[in-house]
Amino acid sequence: MLMIKRLMTQYVPGMLTCKDVDSFLYDFHEGQLSIAENLKFKLHLSMCRECKTYVQGYKNAIRISKEGVKTAEPIEKVPEELVQIILKSRIKK
Image (cartoon, rainbow, N blue to C red; front, side):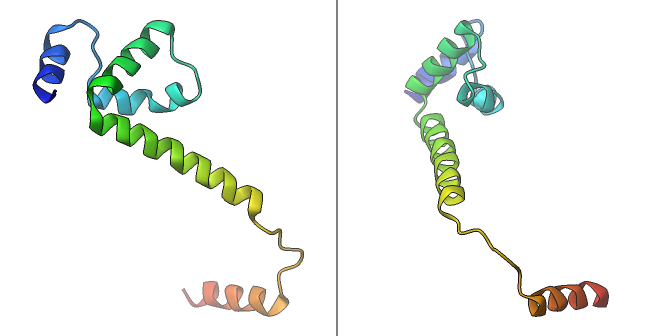
């Protein structure tokens, strides 16, 4: 499959490289790619296990970070002692 991917990126006009996939990742996730770009992106992923794994990791990181924000307990009031310790440590630097 690696050989096919190399040949496709060399000889098929407009075929995305792994570097292209990385640069288009945000727009792909946000649904901002054109139809042609989206097809090229998905074609590359169908041939490149590494990029497919990378994109899945990207999606998982976003999902996990959103879950963390939803489950985090808000801090009502920061203890004054903690505030003073932080302020003192900044002055020493």
